[in-house]
Every structure is written in C-alpha cells, then in structure tokens.
Length: 571
Ligand code: FAD
Image (tube, rainbow, N blue to C red; front, side):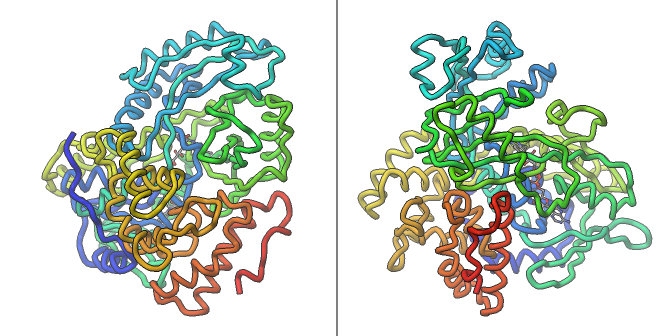
C-alpha cells in the first residue's frame, strides 16, 4: 500500500477563511456540493487524481445522514434476500479495503443472528445465506460463519429469549465511526490539495451568457456571497439533493425517496450484550440491531417513509415504541423503558426513487444523473460503498472534463483504495493500540478506556494530538468524568479539524452529546467560553451557539417532553 502524504495538516478556522477566499478566486475543475460521506469520498478521489477540486458543506461535515447511520461496514446480509448479489459482493470487497486504509476507524465485529421457530426464514435458509455471504467475501480474514445451538448458544447471548430459540448464526461484519470516516476523507482530500469548507451553502447555479460556469453560494458564518467558478459541479447533497435539483434544473421529477431511521442509545449496564445481535422486529419482521459501542448499546433502526422538514428529523413516539417493544420481546428479563434511553438519533436515507416498493426493499444502490450541462447529481448508496461510488463519479467527471473542457487528470487512475486515509497509516492495529496504551499511561497517566478512544479516533495522527493533551493545565483531563473525551481534544479540534461551532465539537468531534444523559448541558458553558477565546466570539455569539445547541436537544429528547432541558445554560 502507498503511504499517505505525511501528517500534520493545518485545518483550523483560519484555514477555512483561506479556503473560502480561494473558492472565490481560483477556478476549479470540479466543485462538490455536500460534505457527507458521498461528497467527501468524491473530493478525496478527485484530489488524488490531481484535479483542482473544491467541496462546500452547508453546515458541518457529516452533519446530515453520514453521522446518523448504524455505523456498520457490511455486505448487507438482507440484500441477499432481494437477490442483490452484486451489491453484496461490492460491499464485502469495500469492507476489506476500508479495513486496510482505515484500520483505526473500521473494526471487525462478531455478529449474532438468532433463529426462532416462529421466524419466516428457517435455519437452513439462514445457513445457506451465510454460506453465500462467506463465498461472496473476498477475504476470510475476519472469519467465516458458524451455526451454534444449545448451551453454546445460551452462553454467547445469555439474556436472549430462550423459548423457541433453535440456533444462533455467528458471522462477521465491521463497525466504524461514521463521522470520523467522513472527517478522514475530508482531511485526506485537503492534504492532497482540495479546497474544502464547512458552513458554505450552495444556492443557485452561476450562469454566464446562459452557460453554467459554477455555483453561487453563501458563507453561512459571515453571510458573504460567493461565486465559485468550476467546469463541473456535483450535487452530493444526500437527502437535500432533490431540493437543489429543483432550484438548479426547475426539475419536478423526484429522483429521491427519503426514509427515516431512528436509533436509541442505552447504557450497556442495562443491556449486557457482548456482540451485535440482529433480530426480526416484532411488528413487521424487519431486521433490527442491538450493537455494543464502548460502554453503550445502540438499538436501531426504524425505516419509515419521510416527507417532513429535512433539517428537523425527530424520533417520534412510534419509533421509540417499535424499538423498545422488539428488544423487550427478545430480552424479556431486561424490561427497557424510556428512562433507560440516554439519547436518540435520527437520519434520512437518501434512496433512489423506485416508485411503489416498500421502504426496506428499496435498493441501496446509487445512480448518477447528468445535466444541466456539466452538472451531475449522485443519489443513493451506503456508507460502506462510498469509495466505489466516488470512483464511478470521478470517472464520469474525467470523461466530461476531457471532452468538454480539454482538462486531463495528472493521474487518471483512482488511488483511494491504495492510500491510507488520514490517520490510517498503521501496519497492525492491535499492536498500535497496545503501544499507545503504554505510552499514554506513562506520559499522561491515561487509562485504557481513554487510550482506546484516542487510538480508535485519531489513528497515527495521535502523534499530533498528544502535544495538545500534554499542553495547558488540563489538556489530559476528562471533560465529563464518566466519558473518555479530554479538554486537549478541543484545542486539537480547533487547530486541526475545522471546528467552528459548539455542536461541531460536542456532537460530532466527540460524542459528548449522545453519550451523556444530560447531552453535555453541564459543560457547554465552559466549552463555549474556550471556543469564544479561540474563535473571537462575542457574548452574543456565545449565546446564539448555546441556543442552537439546546434546540438540538429538543430534537433528540422531544419524544418525552422538554423537561430535561436546562434553559438557563443558554444564558
Ligand atoms: P449526507 O450525509 O446527508 O450528506 C449530504 C450533505 O449535503 C449534508 O451534510 C448536507 O448538509 C449537505 N448539503 C445539503 N444541501 C446543501 C447545500 N445547498 N449546500 C452545501 N451542502 C449541502 N450505510 C451503511 O453502509 N451502513 C450502515 O450501517 C448504515 N446505516 C444507516 C442507518 C440509517 C438510519 C440511515 C439513515 C442510513 C444508513 N446507512 C448505512 C446509509 C448511509 O448512512 C448513507 O447512505 C450515507 O450516509 C449518505 O451520505 P450522503 O453524503 O449521500 O448524505
């Protein structure tokens, strides 16, 4: 594998200002609109091929669907039922590639699939499906499936309902921090020369004498208008892509079908499971997951048609009941209630509109639409297959750039599968984690939980993170006593991760928002004060940041009324 250009990358609010200036002056070959995994994958691929490429994101990177997924890098067992063999084959290949280019972010998971007498799929069919899954996998390196029963089955999942349990299928997939995967792509792209900025919103196409020459945009932080000149434009706005197409093309034909997926986060003390478990939902037999995540468990997901406000997607009472009813059925001694829910998150699947199909049968494949002129829209896909989507998109752009603009790529071949992602230059992750655990214990007196969090978050960029943890009076101190996030990570995030808003740090650069029962309300005052110092915020701006943050709590906790929100923390 080739190695990536060496770390570190300056990626601060000041870098953002420079990038925004560049976007207004430097003509581009490709402008990507949307900083989710789709846009981030495309901008990295294009930058590695030597194009002059830019990316704009209307809010923070991955603030749309790409931080609200089930965080699985998987072949998609259930797509075998829809006979989508090529999708499964491609996804299993990508699982292997991502393990290689981002070993700090992508980790093998042993998954359990219990088979009950009442299930619509009998044991033999599950066994056959998993045989096929193993065969379609390029590599057996993360393990082949096994069918277990009797005492062995009980010991692997002791809390599971025993009545009617015939067998448990054990198979392998991977998990990943979805936000971090986007961030690593964006940082790698910037290292390769891409011009990237969060909080820049694409408005209309920019036309000169009737010809599209770029995009008109607004810097959401300053309100300044920005005309970005580019030969080609890619609409990678996920669930928002039809909205943009409507403005850009006056197009009424929807290409997109959005379905909502809700997850619940619980403490693992309340549902003591060791491995991800897939179960058929009680009401409609759709597969749902319970996934251990550090000291927590994520339950999800729902899949329902969504036509509401794209910027305010809330878990509703029915979503919560759907998940609690299912897991209470399969874990009868646990008796989960609302009070066990630490947090929730909800996202929208940007699916290709196939008209008439039920939500979970709509394909997770993607489509690229061309026009008007050199403007493209890319719709659909999965987190797992983002790299191959990007590859096809950039191949299409290459043809367009050559034929219409006589622009040739310095390196026409896609190199994203060969070069490690930012932080991913690691030979053996287990050894890497051990080495860092020892070093962090000796140098900063950090425990194993914190060391694991740091190794899995930053990979070999830890060399750059550590000086931030070692600096100042409390760089290596926890922001909240029960969670592994440190104050030094805030300074690092400001300098190296384009963190320009309170929720950028508390919701996405860390998971304080999702993993704290109070959604970090006790610390947002101090985080905001420190950010104000670094970013020059006025008192008014601090207040605005806090109010915006509290509004996000209303979204995730709204299903139980708003009594838990401490309004005084906004003032
Ligand atoms: P998004 O992440 O939504 O990115 C689009 C971006 O465009 C947004 O950040 C938005 O702010 C920006 N934008 C919009 N309008 C503008 C504008 N005018 N100007 C600038 N920017 C704009 N896939 C898997 O492989 N594994 C899983 O386990 C998995 N689980 C899932 C669970 C759920 C509940 C959901 C909803 C999806 C799941 N997926 C999973 C699918 C995967 O998460 C999505 O396919 C993927 O994240 C979509 O990424 P995207 O970049 O296309 O969209």
